[in-house]
Length: 237
Length: 237
DNA sequence: CGAACCCTTGACAGAAATCAACTAAGGTGG
DNA sequence: CCACCTTAGTTGATTTCTGTCAAGGGTTCG
Image 1 (cartoon, each protein chain N blue to C red):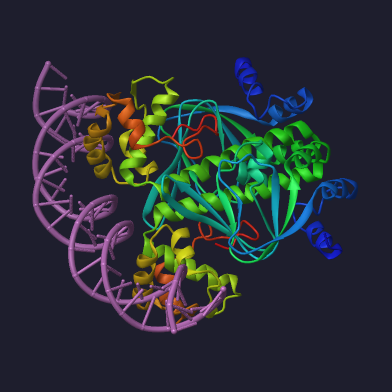
Image 2 (cartoon, rainbow over the protein chains, first blue to last red):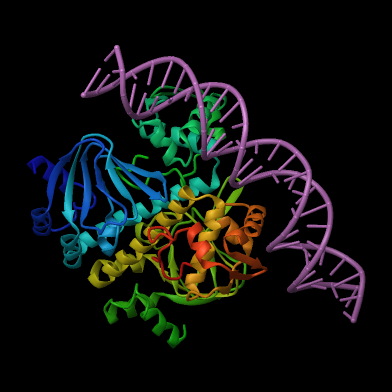
C-alpha cells in the first residue's frame, strides 16, 4: 500500500478523527489491491469480511432476485461500501463489481468492529458515515416512489449538473444502461425518455448532456433537498 | 413517564447495553407522551430534535414531493425512528403521523449525540440499530426495483404470515391503502392484485388473509433472505 | 475484419395509473 | 333510532406508461 494512499484514507471522514494508534492498527490488517474491469468483488449473500474503500476507479453495487438484477449505486473515489454488513456481521445485501480497473482498500470487518469498540471518535465517525448511507437510500426509495421515470431522469441530469459545479454541459461518465437500471427503468425506456426531455430543456448526444433551458428544467423537476440533496460522499449514482 | 415504560425502554437493543448512569441521564431529558390518532408528529424538512420511540400504537413514516406522497414504513412497538437525522443533526427526510392513539418516548437529539460520545456501548448499539435501518431500506428499494406489483403483494403477504408465526390465517392490521402506498402502487391496483392472487394461494376478505396453498405461494415468490429477511425491529411495513 | 456490445428505434403487449361510479361500514347529529 | 355524511374499498372503462421483442447502426477490441 502506497504511503500517499494511507494519507488519503486517513483524511476520509470515516478515519480522520480516530486515534493515530488505532488507525495504524486498522491499516495493519488492511491492504490495497488493484482489480481489473468487470470483476465481481463481492456477491450478495456472502459473509461480510471486508469494508471496501474505493481509492481509484468505479464500483457498481447491484442486486439480483430470480433472474433479474439492478444497479443500486455506483461508488467512486473516495467512497466506502458495505459498511453496514461489516458492522452487523451479516451477509451482504448487494453485490459489487468493478466498472473499470480499480484500486480498493480492504479493511477486515473484525478489526473494524474491534476498533470502534475502543475508539469513541471512530465510533462517532462510523455512525455519521452510516447515517449518510441510510439517508442516501431513503432518498433513492423516495425518488422511485414519488416520481415517474421521466421525472427521475430529469432530476438525475439536474443533479449531475450540480455535481459538475452547476455546469450546463457535462458528460455522463457512466454507461446509460447503468443509469437506466439505477433509475429503475429499461435502457430502451431511458433512451426514449431522453429524447422527449428536450421539451423541458435537456439535450443528450452520446455521453454529452446539455441543459438548454434551466428554468424549464427546474420547473419540471423542482429539486428537493430531501430527495436530491447530498449525503453520501463517493456515491455517484 | 411510567416506571414500567422505563424498564421496557431499557430493554430495547438500542439502550440495553449502555451504562446505567448514562441511560438515566438520557431519560432525564426524555419524556413520554400520548398522541391522538392522525396527528402529524414531524414533518419532513423539520430540524431533527428528538429521537422517537414507539411505546404503544402505530406510526406511519411517509414522504411527499410536489402534490404526491407515499408511505415509507409503519413503526409499531417497540421501534424507533428518525435516528439518522438526529445523529447527523440534519432535517428529517420523512414525515411521521400516528395511525392510532399512540404513546411515544421522545429523547432529545442533543442528549443522544452527547451520550454516545462518552458511552462506547451505546455507540455500538446505535451503530447496530442504524445498520439495521439501513439494511431495511435497502431491502425495500430492492423489492421495488426487482419485483412487479403483484410479486410485491405476494411477498408482503408471505412475510406477514411469517411475522404471525407462520400462521396461514392472519389479519392485516393496517389499512389497505397504506399497504398499497408502502408497496408503491395505487389502492385500486392493490385491490385488483389481491383478487388475482388466489391463483397463487392467497385469499383476502376484508382484513382477513388466508394462505390456501403455501407451496404455490412459495413457488411464485421464492422468499429471499436478502430482500424479505428481518432487520429492523418494530418496522412492520 | 469480425465479434461483441451499447445504444437507438419501431411495433407491440402488458402493467399500472386515472377517472368515475358504486358499495359498505362507521360516526355524527338531529 | 335513523338519516346523513365521510371514508375505505371495490369494480369497470379508459388512457398512459413501461417492458418486451426484434432489428439496425455505431463503436471498440481482439
